[in-house]
Image (cartoon, each protein chain N blue to C red):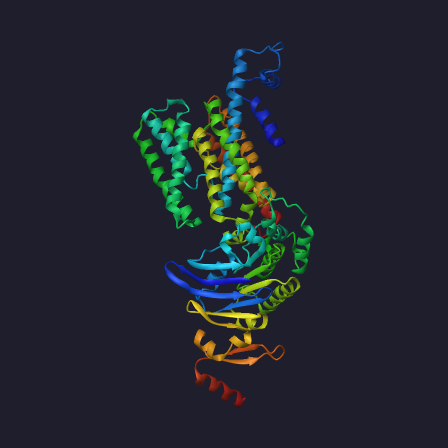
Length: 333
Length: 272
């Protein structure tokens, strides 16, 4: 939590136009309604950069990261598969189809700035319903069938996206950039898309933490201890999907966060989901925030796609933790 | 008391149990035996409430099983399932603690402190030394003891055991069933055990139900039930029944089918 706060402050202060650390905080402080404007000596441009551009982007980074980290923990808990991540059930492909379609035919502005987030969210959620429909038989969802259905739908929709990319000439970069994930050119509207989902999703998943612990022992064990297995699976999956769809709809497909953050937390604090879930949210927030900070300043003024940074940064760190854990305790894995 | 009335269950359209009715008295150890694929585990799953019957009723102390909310049922009835616990990263103590789940609210809190109960369960299973070890570093036998400690912590009135001795060597088999019986006697619990080994069933059970072809072939005390003609009918094999030298309960000695080979063995023994 402390690390998250420090990261937010740090990232706010860093950017391609240099504004001193103290000034950033002065500007923010004076934005609060009860402070007077007497001491204000900043230019309108500086104020705009901090409040309009940076603050919303930093907050969005934290929110998107938190959503992905949480959703990853949720999916791994229910699917009990170490390779599961927020995109396993095809939600990202569904959102991508919606977004790519809009970009290809130039409908981005149909509903104003909300268009892409709303449509991507809707198509992502519809995809999950399709996967559920495929995987369900006689009221029971087998985990293996669920993962297979997800993989099938994912490749099917992925082919659509590739098709649309190949059909377009001039907008190709726009679609590809969206697919690689980015927080560039985002504003407060995007924050308002993600925030409600996180506010609903976080407590929901935390409440199911102990149930997910029992799932680790197997569905039968969980059932014998009084858990309604099918209902729990459905609720956790839907909650995780909402979080994923929200994140993907504003930032595109940021890979690696949802897969690796829960594993990182697991290596640090152990397998207890009651700790794992909130810490995955915080860890995801910190991870995406720093990745995005690097993405926007490393080659400034050019931006690196965020998905590239998360993978470049996350993989070596994960390998290091895994190596250290293996050395500390023979026989792990 | 557990009462089962006209219970039928179809799995994938194939009838596994057909119109089965029986009653099980409280405070006893009941064994369920029968050949492979006869529906022993299915019956146990139906009794546990996890599986729904195709038709018929199961009552626990006069209340239909389907009327119990899942958590309320888990406070009265616990299951030690076949194959035991999977290797997981949780410590022994964490897993045993999970047995308290039916008593916990939303956030995993319980009104009273239950750590003494968990210590007791760990102690009586000989797991105190291992309590902070992760489950994936234990042997199969140790994991089975963890599973039983978890069931103890659940404080049930009825325990269902699904072939609890599979994969255990004879030392652990006897140890496990001794522990269960001791605990059953102390608390007056009802135990229902699906057992593969007829001799163990005979030694530990007060009552035995023999399943055969979707129905009950026989039920009663081990001495009533276990005889050569029943073994022949149900298992299609010849067996000699002898009385256990200490307890007097029937014990089954298996016989190879081919008579010649047996005679050869006997003549060989005479030569040497």
